Length: 275
Image (tube, rainbow, N blue to C red):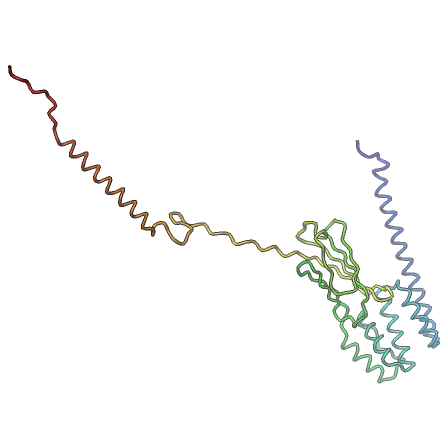
């Protein structure tokens, strides 16, 4: 007996409701992060340098920012560091910002030499390009041009389409893939996420990988008709020809004997004795 109409039609409604609540929670978190960032920007616009620095650092430490928000935070932190004369911190912040968003504008608030430094960093930067490659059940993670030491954690989710994924969190650029993650599939889907030390999302990637086929043993070729598989052919064996010779000689002798017996008449009559 199938499920009742109420239960059957209630399940999709529950799924939609759960998805709506989940989306609302994510949207709410992003809204909070955006409000926090806007408050820091207001302090920046009011030229409250120290307060703005603290506000942007607090926003970064919250760990709930999107890649776009992380890029903007580092951009502002770079400008503020340059304003207070910390050129090393400014260059590091600009490199991180431009790795996530290369189109961020040149800060007009800075003097020409600082703007030139910004342009050189932008020209040398490349956008974050996460990728993953499979090598003998080891996932090799390539973060692209991410500044050294910035990515603190990778989260890798692996599984065939429609199956519950295997998930691992790693601080290295590789992850050992257990056999259970394949579940006998020739192809898998890999979802890769990168996070900074505060837990902010830096980027995501999705790859569809196919497992290399296991090499098979070469098949032994079939010998043509009339030939043997072995290198030493039977036709080359002296024993074969000796056997053939014996058979032929025996056949000839048998034929001669039969012919001789057929042509010879034997008188089997009993002679009459005269009395």
